[in-house]
Image (tube, rainbow, N blue to C red):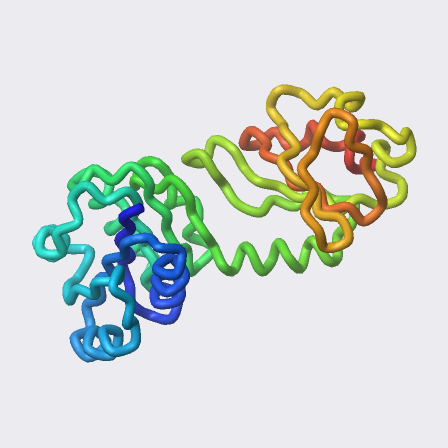
Length: 225
């Protein structure tokens, strides 16, 4: 894929390196001229091109020659900049997949389809979710919004009193509503692909896609609430 990354800080650089190693074509846009020189020396990949410019400005995006790219990643350390980059990527460049970094969790509500954002990644929220996951066994923990905010990824770490365990229910037998779907199970640090005959064990980490605001339907199935 052809991917443009706005922001050449530690986050943007790490993403660029990882994606380049996966054989994607990368354009990294950074507005600090001194950082651009360092990045060109650091990122010695034939499939990474580092451009100098402010990705919040149309003229900089035009100079970067990124029309027709598949994905925009707004990875700067400023939420306002990431929103503008996302909006320009969608409206000016016609990029159909936009991923935005959220630096301040209080700003998460802004990162939606109105600003062109498909997926928002909030490091503070992810860390909080990991803490919640550790502390709140037997609770539904939201991880991130997907599908332009219409769905959310949630995780439940199963306690011994989870109904699916007490009843020894298979995935087919619990008859989840249409608004929820089990997408993966992590057991003993190994990922499992769920099937209709899958049963559940204590300490399983169950990952589900749920319609936004509907994860209450999981109570009484995966939690004792």
